[in-house]
Length: 339
Image 1 (cartoon, rainbow, N blue to C red):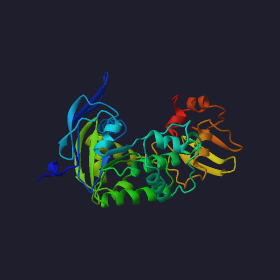
Image 2: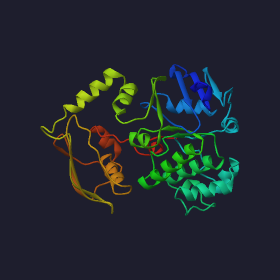
Image 3: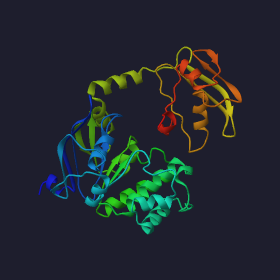
């Protein structure tokens, strides 16, 4: 049999538009039992829309989906679950005004299986009467994954599962995901973190502008090829050339000296020059959120100075920072939106 015949999930030519916006124009994906397939693409490439179509949350405008060798029409997430397809979406799909136990009842989730996976994933302190709205985002992501694993899916779909998780929980998630594939199930894994993809994935399917533009095996040295597929050859080359020209010359666009606030940010200094991308590296909870909040005008500094293009600035409101060209994209997008 060919690969398509052996695929547990085989989607071909899937298309979806929202009014004038074309979210997917020709997306295809195959995954076999025992495989973890990375679904990759730049923001807006159509990855989340594709997963929502495969799991019945959205209806496609065109395309064919075969599950376990049979043509399928999935009209809802509940219908997808009957076929063995279970997602963990990019945003937690839990009702904040209900308890953990109430959410499990709504989703008809096996409680014993859920408890097993919660403990396996490192959230042993969870209580079933905890209110969802009072739990941190990282915990909610783990609860969503535990709910999905509790029903033993044939195809597990993870959309940016680790984006809001600290390193220790990421390691646990990767271990569990690899074990699911080794047990003969299949996983579709969406992430921008290539280290995770290289660690656990077997293949990568790449989307660009709503279209599948490549499918390749994960092997050493493919990062450059994946970036080229994601961005297009000319765009990737231009980005690389622009990055290589960055130099620390002249006045920094942003200069921070001795910045302090609260108990986690005590003495932070940095310079950011034109043409640079500056990485801020830290374990979870080491002050990086407070640093960004101060620079975005969400929080007042208790000590230190900030300069933009050589001029001292004081931010008392996010509008002050935006007026000087500093804008924040928070880790939890809900903090930047009127949901």
